[in-house]
Length: 217
Image (tube, rainbow, N blue to C red; front, side, top):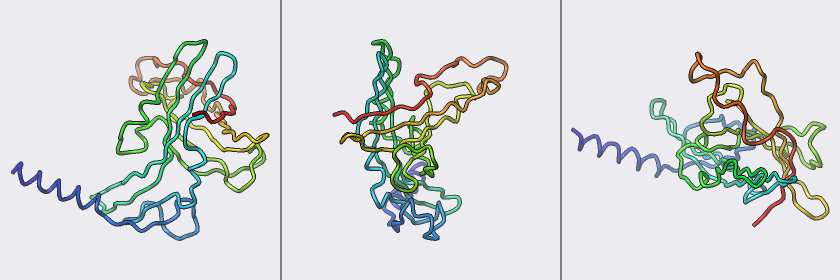
């Protein structure tokens, strides 16, 4: 019986990863291809993610933030509804140094091979309208919204964090602007893992605010 199950699992795995996908632009919302449709590859056709790839650094006094981004295609399989598709994501990680002390280093996690984008600290969600507060934006939906999380979090206030990024050129230097707005509420400071205890995490590694990063080797 165990041998039969192993053979069946191997067959399903080969069938999933050997599947041919029809490519469609992940950011073309007018192509009438519904999200999560079986057999499609939602690909970054125009290379929009490419502008963010690599390592970026922000420094203000003794505070240094290092961001690193990669592009990765994840296969999503839901056998119970006969649906398998592929999708490009921008995944990222953060390193924080304050007053010469390493506060957090999530960069090594970016080299781990997780099967889902949500397993990473940072992953892309959707492109965002510029509106009037998009600094030096020059084309529609230039900003990207990403989900951001920190390990060992038990505070509901920090459970659904996110920030927006976009690149721009100033005096010949390409910069990456992060808009990390504080949308938390003191009333949300509850322990979602243990409702009878206060949360152990009362602050996050990175400060809220607007930060301009420059690319580093």
